[in-house]
Image (cartoon, rainbow, N blue to C red; front, side, top):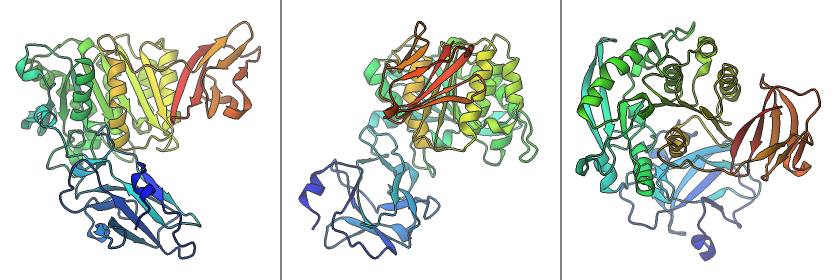
Length: 458
């Protein structure tokens, strides 16, 4: 039987202390199910071993007669196995105690163990009725005259929408297939309704979310304002025109909205993040607040040219978000956009950059950071998620003094080049050379995996 102390210990992964040290041709995973109710239906393991198929019968968990736990076996595992658990679809994936998607579980070859014990905290589809009632299909096939095709439109409304007379800001989001939990969901999603309902409960602040489904084979074209030599595209301007000239007027007429730019936001990820950056640069008079998560800035240098020449109807606020577990180009690309805008005269109260060591190019990461981004965009109405300052610039001593424990700190110049690096054990001060002048950025990796970027004019 599984040791009692192991069953009582609440953790993401526990490895048995007495598993055999020799046979490395298989990995056994045993799972503790949520304690807050029965699990209905089979449970599956999904991961890089099966191309993230959520209902792969080869990795269906079966009861283990000895431990009493659900168990699956991975023959001949690679050096690193990334995995999660579902009940057959991404609408039923596992979530943490806050109802948010969990990061990928990671198993790496260890010479003393090949049995992994994992605990599932909850399931995504265990939504309260209030969450389910907040999301609806508004248009099954709304005509897009600018693109000569139609598209399904989803709408989320705050919990008090149907029994109040309040008017609300509106957030437009792309890739609606990946935003909400619904029966037809075949992909991982952000859990937008759960996050915003929780924010409403804590702050009494709510917003309407309009989710536009992507166009499958037309997705790259619609989310790219210019063509790419390899991938084509270039319908982004028409797609933005659909949002500004067709969809937004219909939304404002049908719902109790605050239609001005200060109360109209856009949030997108990946290619949806790219088109969101273009919306910030070209349509700041319509979308006054924009968040671009893991934006595909690699698509074209045109986006940087546009940022360098952007007129002053630029958005009131812009959030850029990325993670270290994405492509090698992601951080340099995002930093280049950040510096381009700063050099063009936009300041810290308009632009916010978040970077996380554990961030991956996937919905669980974007969903986890949604509340922080919304709070910062709408900080005039709701308090942002506060973080104490990580460092201060001591002008008299010409040094930067770290105020928090950091795993690593890097000072970058205006071109993004690292000119000074400091590991946490080396101390808490960065001396500044007398010839260092201009705009610099201090990038600190904090123990909670968040990378904080602080600008300094030296």
